[in-house]
Length: 326
Ligand code: SF4
Image (tube, rainbow, N blue to C red):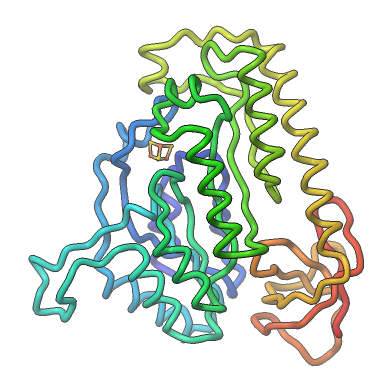
């Protein structure tokens, strides 16, 4: 759709890739542009400007149209979705009497149809609210999955990055998510070897990862981007081989934790939205759980793309869960 084209133009700052290829089942809707944060490694504040939230009625209209076209999953996109905020002042005639927060918007999109799954990306740890977590817990069709980029586990490095939270704040946020949404999938972005990062600070990142037990992570070593605050203020002084070795340790830890997370799913029955044929065989479906795990399972001759399936997990291979119809 039109919106997919709009979304393609965005350059997302948090480093996880957003897959915008349409499979006819999952789609993306931009809800805001720009970002008011000033993370020192990020170009977005300079290239995308101040935050502008989109009219909620047009977001809901577009989401309904996508549902009517057969899409069964919508991801609400923004650099920092939790700071979505729309005030009705210029648009009072359109029927929204009061400001609309991200929690309000998320709930309205979830109410379009129980068969429509709703996801969102990206959340900033300092901005995600209990209201959002409560809305998620009230609606089965809002996926229990939060991408919550931490970037570093060291308070000094977080401050240099200008992330405006501490490791303690972040860990308390993860505790809160697990308390209100037991079993919720949580993933992160992590940068190894940011300017002046010490060995101890790197260890703090590894410890924080263990604490958070991420299901998956997008991990990179720091590379300076021209025009950013970090490029102007800080020397990119961690030697490349040190950055790479730290990244290797981070990746190894995440691989172990992802494996543990997948093994913990064995024996569970999960509801999968079928996205299409599995890459390896057209005798198998590929889909995702609410927690955003990819699951492959043999077709049963009745289901089709865009249907939901109850699948029992019996194992995993690489990052993929293996299941079968129950
Ligand atoms: S929150 Fe930080 S990393 Fe994300 S877009 Fe804004 S400035 Fe960039």
